[in-house]
Image (cartoon, rainbow, N blue to C red; front, side):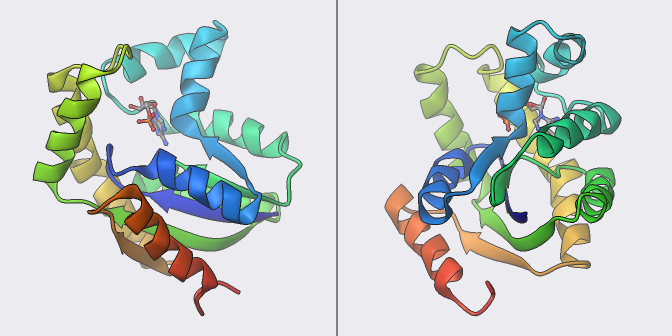
Length: 191
Ligand code: AMP
């Protein structure tokens, strides 16, 4: 099974670009954020642990997310998957490399969507107006961006030292960003 990883800060449009990637590749889309919310909604033991972290904008502990993520991948039967929201810490990069090697998965492409902080905050404000998610509060939004900068940016740099990570400019319309990603999919970085 092939793996495409899409990473980037909160509000960088990862979810929408995953929809685009899904149409282009026919791979399954796995969002760890969506899976956390699903476990919570189903009231599973793992969901109960995760709900407090998720609602406060904190990252779920690496070991909990590793178990969830391994369970999801083991149950996945498609030709390929698009990972959205994993890895987010240096430890998760190592976990991902371990899991993909154990399950014989091939990391085909890592895309990092780059959006400056002021643009992220603008987008967060717009989303707050139209959302009923419990983590949609301004202090939570700022915290999520801070966590990205403190934990996920170093993880992306660590990942870059092990594997080719391709940066994509995430400023512009959704179609413009999709078109940039489309060029990468058709380009020499993807076998
Ligand atoms: P998202 O929808 O991707 O923004 O994720 C929502 C929430 O789910 C995050 O704020 C975390 O609490 C949790 N979460 C999702 N992915 C991860 C991850 N890779 N590591 C830790 N927590 C995660």
